[in-house]
Length: 437
Image (cartoon, rainbow, N blue to C red; front, side, top):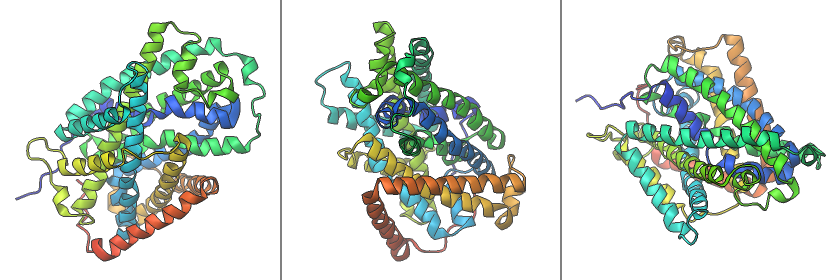
């Protein structure tokens, strides 16, 4: 019998909302304040600098998603253009994020909920949020993406109210000096802020469930990035223009605190609710995307094939969703500061981006039929330019963050060594045919 495949149910609005919801998540409510304490009032410049490699990432994701419109497309690209082992390493790094990223964002949700209901057990709230999002993704993409749309509208509106409502109240005196600690902290802040753009990966990971991917994927990426760039410039600008940068790092829920200076109480409450929705969409996007990575790995035999099954009723990779959910719940007690967490996550992403950039450079020559059939592609010169810039920026960011987190580099190398051992001992075998469905 033919194997069941994922159905294409995500249209252009849902895809754009999915990207915005995955990229503009809880970190925009937390990270800018923390980074302002390091970079000073120029924290918004750090976000603009981080947007440069993010723009190249948009082009890369558009090309990859159109050329290989299948769930787990980045894995398929790296596997077939570079090597099966590096494809496995991609999945190994991505799946590992579930144990830290999901619970930490869910904890952020719990913190914001305590703003309304003091005394709640944050651990119970954290676990409950994760379980709820697992159930939504298990039931189906129509339910997940539909709920995502509603939550995204809520928190985007809250951020727009904060950004445009706060601009007239920015105090120029608080913006001087613009670089109180020099340029070096700006560079470090930019590499850390890139974490807030990293969700652009999601569109390539769920490409197998997108209608008319050749047209929808590029349009969704570029439309959503316009909104993202606007928010990521204005929110840090308003924050550092209303709260003193030297004390902002100690302020919990900086966006809500700043909003109290110029908005009525009911709008401050609305923004706090927006923060809750942002955290929820981040958790939803992570479980949605990483489960597709694990599904594709299991389908290719890198993990037990038992987890590659499609649910007969919901037509979702239900078992893969449960695995990622289990990892998320297992990591619910993991800790660390938001800056440490973001920097380590970006280091993992930089390794993945370097592999992706090299693989995409090789795609036209190694798999010309795949690239030629793509509905969205770049000319050879443009493709080479985009990929090289993507690789160079990723290498620079990796170097800068490696100097900031030398201990994480050591543990990261150990983790990669464990993954390589798993591959050579357990998972190495002829991989499945190039079935991009």
